[in-house]
Structure formats: structure tokens, C-alpha cells
Length: 268
Image (cartoon, rainbow, N blue to C red; front, side, top):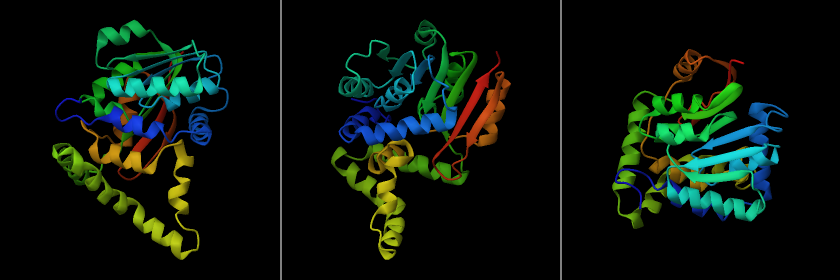
């Protein structure tokens, strides 16, 4: 069971795991390659902080990573990632999956340093985002990459979304899917109506998996329920990471309530 006030991330990832096929894996591989560049992981080490389903650890291996270390605070997420490994990489001795927190300095120091440290949509759920970003940055080898994605700060709207998440986690469990469905319709009904009027029913919704291999429903559940919750502007993240000695390689702005993506590189 999750701690009081903390969303059951692993439970959601286990449900998502049933949907994963080669098409979603290919989309995850493409999204990593698009941000890091061709050949960036070939023969390199890769750490996946808050690995969730393990999809992007698998993608890193498919891009030629020599060793992947995945960890998550949530035990059910660890189980989900191990399930992913069993389904797609039964013999992958170079992929280890552990339970641990990026805020646990002893655990993190025992992992060593990596050519690429990846954490997509995770560090803002730790309860201490900036300490988590600094800890992740400390895992990067000289000349290595830090690839993170953090919720975009939206002023008053950020406070509204935090209230939405708090309410979700206080609801009785049987009511939570209904509550999440309201937001699913809010996000997806307008586009679905437009698609229907254009004679291409649900085209936008069906194309969602092609972005990162994810599921629109499970991402909405994660968004509506995900606590702890913090957010940051692009400028804040850029300033913080360059202050740690990194230089910016690529930024993809979300512009709304989702995640901005950042790739930074450590000094050689």
C-alpha cells in the first residue's frame, strides 16, 4: 500500500504493462533517440531514476546501452519493471532493477556514476524536487548526459492541479476511476469530436502512443493522482542545472500542464 498522501504509481504502471507491445517499445526508443541524438547510448551506461514500467530502460538497451540500472521508490513499480524485463529481455544480465530513492544519499552513492542519467516525470513527485534534481545530476559522469522531464509551472493553475490531486487521493478507491474519467473527457473529448467531424474517428487519441509509447488513459490517471507534486519553469530548471556545471543540449517546452524535457551535458 502507498503511504498516506502518495499516489500508487506502481499500481498504475502494472495496469499499463498489459498494453505494451513492440509498437510502444519502438516509440520509446525513438523518443530517447530524438532527444539524445543517434548513437548517444551505444556502449554507454544508463541510469533510469523512477523507472516505473521499465519501458525506457528497455529502450536504452535497444539503443545499445552496455549497462542499465533502474530503480524506483515504489515497490510495485519495481515489480512492473521486472515484469517488463521478463517479457522482453529474459537474458539481459546487464539490466539491474532495484528499490530505492533518489533522496537516499547512501543508496545513490552506492550506484556509482553513469554516461546518461534519465528521469522522466519523476523528480517532481519526490517531495523535494530540487534536492532530487541535484542528486540525479551528481550521478552523471564527466561529459555525460542528464535527461530529465519536470512539470511545467503554471502559476495559479499549478495550485489548482495540486488540489485536484489531493482530492483524488482522498477519495474512496472505487470512486477514483470515475473521477479520473472526468478529466480524461476534459482532455480528450474536444479532439475526439473534431476527429469525428473530419471523418477520422479517434485519430488523435490513437496516435498518442506514438509520442513516447505511453497510454492516454494511464497518463491521465498519473496526472490526476500524482502526489507529491511540484513544478518548475524552463528558466528555473535551466538556471539550476547550469549552476551545477552542466550546459544545455536540448529543451522541449510543453507550454501547458505537462512536462518540459531537458537534456544537459556535464563538463568533460
